[in-house]
Image 1 (tube, one colour):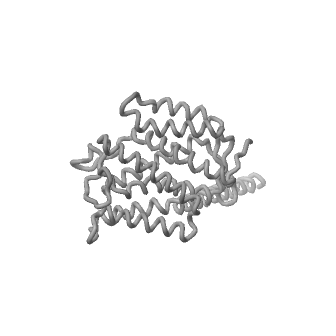
Image 2: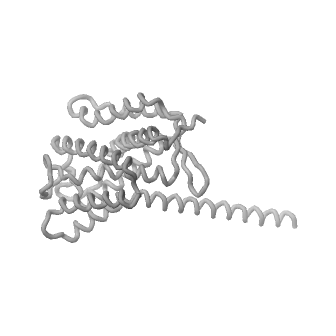
Image 3: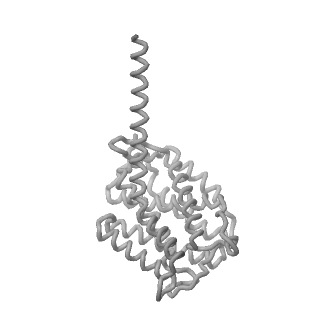
Amino acid sequence: MSVTIQHISEKKALKTKIGNSLKQLIFFGWEQALSCLFPVVIFLSLAITKMVPLPMLPRYDWLLIICLLMQWWMVRSGLETRDELKVITLFHLIGLALELFKVHMGSWSYPEDGYVKIGGVPLYSGFMYASVASYLCQAWRRLQVKLVKWPPFLIVVSLAAAIYLNFFTHHYWIDIRLWLFVSVIIVFWKSWVSYEVGGTRYRMPLALSFVLIGFFIWIAENITTFFGAWEYPNQAEAWSLVHLGKVSSWVLLVIVSFLIVATLKRVKGESQPDRG
């Protein structure tokens, strides 16, 4: 009889544990979805303007207007602070500079018309990069992110600068992407990101979080290219899956954006590193 009672008790405990885990997973997914508000608006805008042509202005210009209004509303509603807006704007400019160079080099193109284009690049494109920084800022606050064993400032800045410059220099010199990945692993080997879900704190190796975010951005890239956000040379005739190798590029770009956001949080004292 006691064995049966113990077995029932163990089954109840297992069900409770599974139920709590599912609740935590759902809550985590909901917080992530809220953090992705800006990217989701961009996706919806791309889809709607692709299927329903808007009057008076070319599609790219309407996308710019939508992004500007969304950014204004994010700050106006308090979802983003003015300091976060500065970081997001910085990343918008960083992304736009990269777009201008890559389009000039023929890495991809924006084939549709638009009044607000510079060097063949519509200005809305910078918001796709800025939305990554927006997601990081939102997730940072909602999940109460803390950094564990964060590397020294100069090392972090130097690594971020080297990653960003390699996007340009590999067209003229050797691609040091592999060495940059090795450097990331070495620099962040002992670093973790700590976050809270439903009152419980969890932590994850920082390098793993870079890979996961980069992978999901690659999935988003396939969606956006399907809706004509931009076009790779192999998609000129018909849409095809973006090469899986692009995940590595997104991982490196995520690292740059993460380091910029982390530096802001450190400067503002919103994320004191845990040395434990």
